[in-house]
Image (cartoon, rainbow, N blue to C red; front, side, top):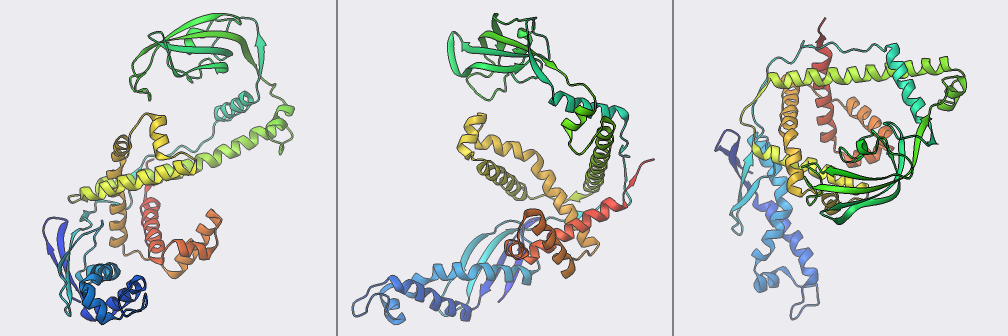
Length: 427
């Protein structure tokens, strides 16, 4: 094989390579053996035509496309290694020559990984993270748990913020009812922000049996395009007004919240411990984000290829839509529910795509600068962790992820650890 790379731009070029004629001949035979099974020819039973007759009837070139498709992936990988380049997106392949009995000549327009000029990435100074848990934090968490166990009790007096009203409502725009604008016996907590701005405010002061015309203006960015920015009137009938009856803060309350405790003091102690763990984890994540972002900000990527950003946008979109599908929501349904389009989703993911691409490039550059490697022991440990995390067998993990992929992820993690562990918090 020969492989020659000709640079055309900062990160672009053309890779020209050959596929050896002996490999071609062997694969032509494989291709012929596959296609002949479906061929009927005079003097031959179906699938029994010989190569000579096939070539006479169809020409050997009829086998070239399938043969090239079979040989190209390995040939391209070998060519980029020989040329010592690192493409980052799928190449645009062109056939230069496919002559019988000769090496085939292929060209590939490639976009390469851009150069990264690293700045400071070790011994960085980051903001100090607060890990203290105050009494007010414990009381706030306790109040949330108390709120969760509150009972709703019907009252005769007027509704106030925080109360729940049980209502029927019917919305109209220019006197015409619109889809999704009505419901019966709906429980709405006033002040929750569940409804359109202004809706809940107009029910404060209402009593059971009252009828209220609630006038609102839909937000300009409302998901249903025909209602965005439009004025509407909701005819509301109030059936009940309910207020919250909060449970007493005593030992019985504590046991209702958590059956592993006996007293309110035990519950408070457990809440404090949980909050301390949560704050330490949050501080660790914040330290990682701050140190890594500083290392990325200190680096320069020379002429970031737009194709890399575009590919990242589509990767993120595919991941997002796949998650939606797992919840039973097809893309068309998602776009209908949200009043958006595929183009809108593309725009949504564009914002962070360039940042993610640059971050990955900088981490890879740090790993290369530090000559970080992944050992066999590292791979074994990573496989075990992934298997436990996702409830898979280790063989299944190895089947889903190649060793090269595992090693790449391990190397990136080590590079991130190097940046984060060397960072110092400001005093």
